[in-house]
Structure formats: structure tokens, C-alpha cells
Length: 77
Image 1 (tube, helix red, strand yellow):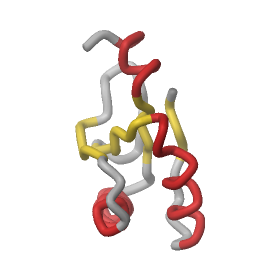
Image 2: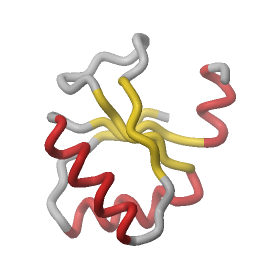
Image 3: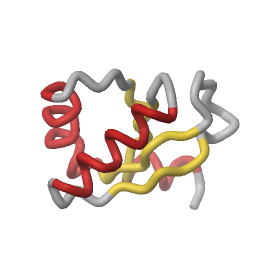
């Protein structure tokens, strides 16, 4: 999948550490939100080497969930 295809279908959610990635992934699974933990692409710099790939259609629910559980994140579109 090209970088442009990824932008139109999903967003990458970056976290400051692997612990946050694992916590966010678990919360998404519990709420039925499909996500995938993947290595951070080379074109993005990140303190943590992992991120979550989440469908754009699920981003509003993810943001609310992450904010509720005080998970620090940033979104790369």
C-alpha cells in the first residue's frame, strides 16, 4: 500500500512509548475497534518504534477512548 493510499483509508496513531501502544491496542480491542500495531514508518520520526494503524472511520471513537483513559498520542494522517 502506498503512502497516499494509507492516508485515505487509515491514520497512524503515535505514542511516546510501547506501554501506551499496548494499552491503546487493548482498549480498542475491548471496544471492538479494529487496529493493528505496526512499526513506525521510516518517513515519520517517533520516540517509540511502534504505532497503531486505525481506520479513519474509527478515529472519533479512538480519540474519545484515548482521552478518557489519559493516553498520550498524536495522529499522523
